[in-house]
Length: 417
Image (cartoon, rainbow, N blue to C red; front, side):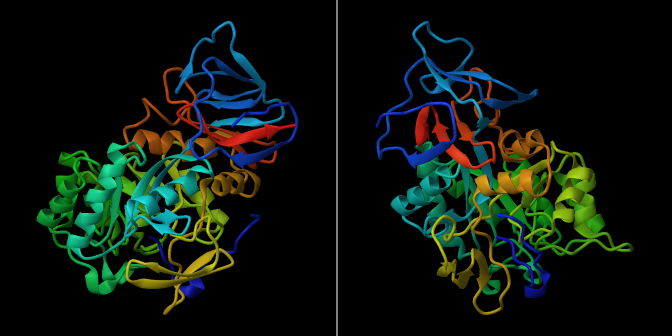
């Protein structure tokens, strides 16, 4: 959960039945219990983003829950001319939405938050927690693991409590602690095999040992909310850390004599860097710097969303901390520091292409393939290829989301007329 000081923010930029025809689209949520798409569905005519690049007038087959290589003779053909067809988004780092917190919500509340993000194109989501008492985190991990076993979420990300009080962001300082490997192991065990990532200030006592522990257990060690030097960050990467938690935010900025963690994380090919592309957390030049140095294969767009995503302005609780959301920007009520985001990934894509000027295929990789690979899920999701889950998105020519399919079922039904 990122935070910057009040003066540190960057300027924002521009921000049943299935009926189909072939021009501009509207969209509506699917029924509460939608039926899978008909077997032998052909999506034809869209500009389709494939692993090999953008294909004009693409041709994609959906058979049940999967993308198929060939269609049946009686397959239904849907004309998507004038639209884009993309893989579903994969969010590595998300604390909630739709008024629900993944850190403290009930199962029903968490599912409502997950559905909110699905309506915005996120078909694969890792639920992130915020700093709390260790027993509280362990109990919530048990609840989240049940939802992971049901296939509703892709796993759990623990952001805190093993982070630096110097870079605590929107975390309660009173609940922070050093990354004792035994306590890190307690959270991993509580997740029952569904812990995907733990964010650590690796310079703290026990940090390097905890990175090694996580690597041994197949859990991503992420450097974040850290006051580490360049040299300490290099040591953490060599020990097995492979992710930069919301790069630039909640860490020392680059200095010409003390380059700090940012330089170390950007230069190492083993590291994937998270970016919050909401126009508040990052200046466009910082985003371009990350893509230039890390390259398009090592960037993952995340939301770092909190409860207000897809829900609206107001006062919220983030763990024990009060957060005010005004005009879509979340700030701690007492300090004014930025407290996560209200971002959805469809907005991150549209901004990346229309404001930041990224090639579509690079933006899509940052939203789908790159996080899927990092999570070890690329054999199932993250690209439009035969044999993978039919997780796909329909957008209009202006990159406005019009349709969402997850595992062959329409979550948002595109109405083309």
